Length: 390
Image 1 (cartoon, rainbow, N blue to C red):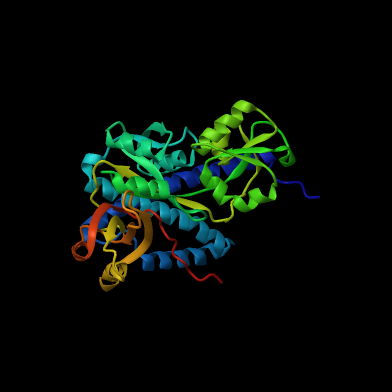
Image 2: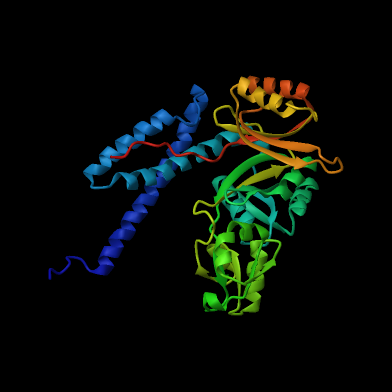
């Protein structure tokens, strides 16, 4: 057997050296992204250029072959780098468009103690903005909203829909009555695990603790466990706290593995959601709306109530089609106190300040009994540019 020319320690040192060089290069590339954003202000070019991204990826794949790097590996890495570049540019441009909202510390309310999915979404969102969080955990969605309304928090983070369990109706009902504006969004991967405080086996678990949403999102796996009791908590983080305090081999929590580690919990079973691609979309609410520069893609959310006549809703939806506005979400909720009357929540891709969206709002105002814009905010879900792989 041929002896290696380097010892394992020497190889590891070289790996660490290369990793350090990669980090320095990534930092340099991120700084160059800011310079790109500055130049786009002068040229009034949009942040995203799909044709340019496609050419870039194709060149990188070709160059990677010379280094014996396969195409999927190259594309996966640079999808992440391009996403980061887009979001960094958007955050920079939004700071310029909203100088009064730029602050080094943000007071943020969210559901559950530290470690909840709302907490993770808040951390993720503000890490992109290089803003420090002052965390304000809440016991209900209503409290999340009220704390922002009374000025104790600058922002509130609310989950609004999940790819597995659908819309979160409690949040839509809060939006119907609040004075707050939606100022941002983030889509967070949801990775549910069975978490325990002590070493045990699955067959020993007779009681689970979690928020109602994870129970819905993991219903297929939970049926396979048989007669296991389900206890409801106000958040996944509260469930983790309870299981950590019990230190029993018979109980477990459903939640995120990294959050569980905050409470000394270990994953007993991972990937238990009904869908492998399980994501939750969160919105960010604040007392004042934000301006969205026309250099970045924007989304507008509003609520409307139509006449109780046949075809009333269809007439409203045709307004979007006639103006070439893409509707991404339509949700109905009952109007409290008015039996059989529905309030419709609508998400569209469009900037409220644009001439086209102003025409849409004007037409909808004449067709509806009630309409209110809940917010216009940057789209932060960066769809990857696809290329053909050999």
